[in-house]
Image 1 (cartoon, one colour):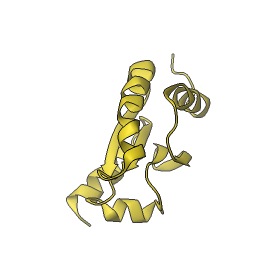
Image 2 (cartoon, rainbow, N blue to C red):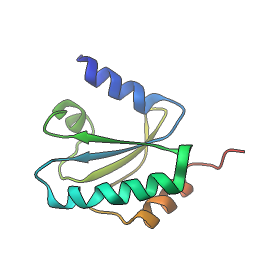
Image 3 (tube, helix red, strand yellow):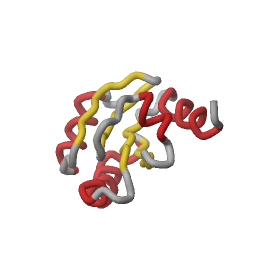
Length: 106
């Protein structure tokens, strides 16, 4: 197992939820996701870690989660998939999905 894959697995296995954006540099809709993810990150703060994974550079991770199209967004917590969607999602929708899947912490 490569160090990169191990690091990815460690990231998605933690207590903190992680929203992973599987993307490709040549993908137009993927480029549209960047400002949406920045907006989402501002709204959810530390509740969720948001990472981007280039499917061309990380084929093993993309293959392990059957990513067939990009962008594909997957919300993980403790290594489990809480939600997944292919295609562009608006920021308000992502915030709603995060809030529905992750209980509020006090």
